[in-house]
Image (tube, rainbow, N blue to C red; front, top):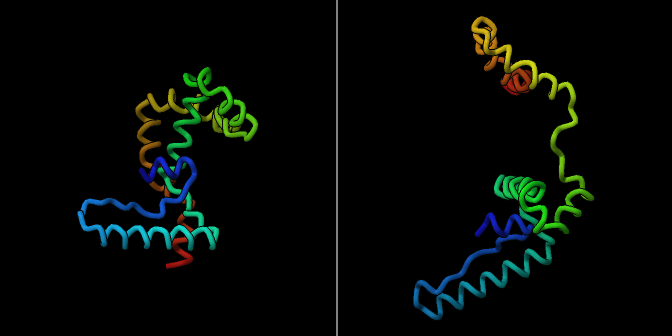
Length: 134
């Protein structure tokens, strides 16, 4: 339910059920929810974007770009207008690197060197921050 609301995008202010069977308790929960809704509206509250929203948007975007384009023509037009079709990446250096390196990694000695450097390479951008903060 949360992922669906985030995709809209909408804020999940809470969920109220009648599981307790106690009418007074349900009324109290509804009052609390109504209070949160008013407070969120007054504060123009917008929850931060989470992985659920980003992931769902990208999955739906990819589907609209490909197999759902016929069904979701208006969405396709709007996604193009908004620049949401940000693939394939226009980073030519990365595209060339991604085309050339995988075949090279089939050579055992090159693969071994690559594997030795992969962890240091992954943490290298953060090394200065950690050293400065530590």
